[in-house]
Image (cartoon, rainbow, N blue to C red; front, side, top):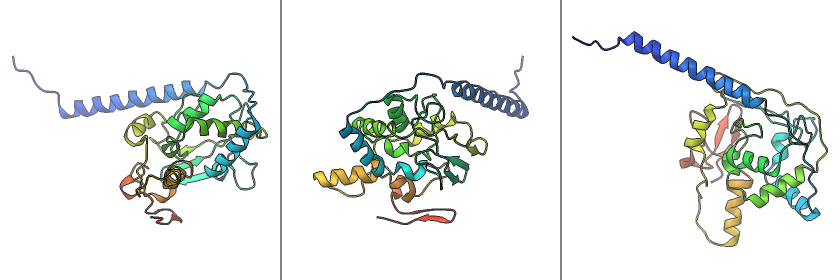
Length: 242
């Protein structure tokens, strides 16, 4: 008896069905994760010196620049960030329990900065520079958390991110992170002094300079072989700072 191989169109149809099932599963999981929004409001009473250090570090990390919309309340989000994939809106990081991060623990905050995962378990888009913040120390993350949790809660809802398919499927970022999320970004100079180490930390991590000044690849990844060599996104151009 002669066995025949499946026809080409059968394989194509099977492939399309597999893609459709994968997409449907991704949407279902995404919606399921989005429902994890309950939990107690966090009460954070940190020492004044920790809060003061957190304020300094939040300025070094330039948190307000993205998390404050023009004419909006500080840290209440709403800034629209245009990309080649659509529009991403910065979120509210004031301690409002419903619209901000008032229910987030220090561990939740650390996970967002270090892994790019929100409290609800959803992947964060790398417009939030966790690809740089991943190198942040836990002590610095906790200090920033202590500071932002002392801000005035602002009940300001964040606009919904508007990305094109398939970039609007957050679960696809799991694969993106496997390829492009690194423990450390490359140093562009050499040195061993305390000043050099601190400078590298401020440039690569806290200041996340590479997020704007490093060219981007086809799926939005930083081209680390050309770190800090400048990048233009539409009418906005970040110069070469090497």
